[in-house]
Image (cartoon, rainbow, N blue to C red; front, side, top):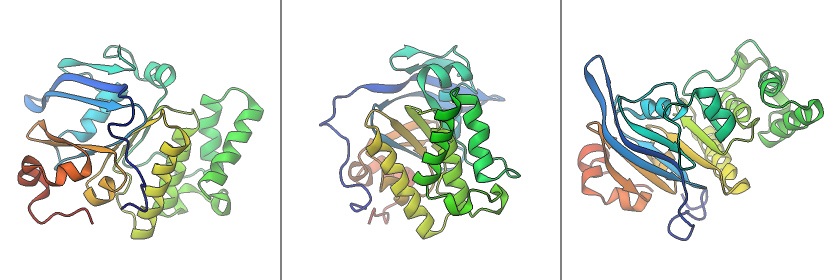
Length: 259
């Protein structure tokens, strides 16, 4: 674990909240999904979001990006209330980007064509656009497959293309929904290093990552939040969480170890 992430942003970094959810509640068809959930994600940190299936992790992502409006509570980005601000304004004005759980790429387009399609929307200057595309291809080591259609790429390669597309707008907030799903051990390790490098390159950027692969996620998280029974039951550093009685009883179990 220490090889991938050599330090964790904890108390030594000035706490500046990049995203805040304040007393969020949401129900679907009379079934309550979230109940009075409040959380903060700090500038510059990688924050993991863990919990059982159906607990509301993807719903929290949808609330942050503006796809879903909560029944109660407010969403803040950079200390500004964005609860009533639409998706595109959150993306443009606050540098918000998302890597979805599935999809995220155009299957019938090549790696290069996928990057061009996004860059034409978010980068106005043509020379800057070409520079960014080449930079992403180099950064994610995609040169050998840049002319390969996305549907023929491996799971790890598609995930890299999806992340590269999300970075074309130079976002300050990146949400990743189950990025390790379906990846083999080597691809997972490669993606972990990619995510940590995103933090290293811009220490003001924050990443929120939701995944069921708890060990893989905790290995790169500065801090993590665990949801269960519609609420946050524990939060803190990975070391704090594995010793938290609520986290053990409701999520990890007694046998779970980080290493």
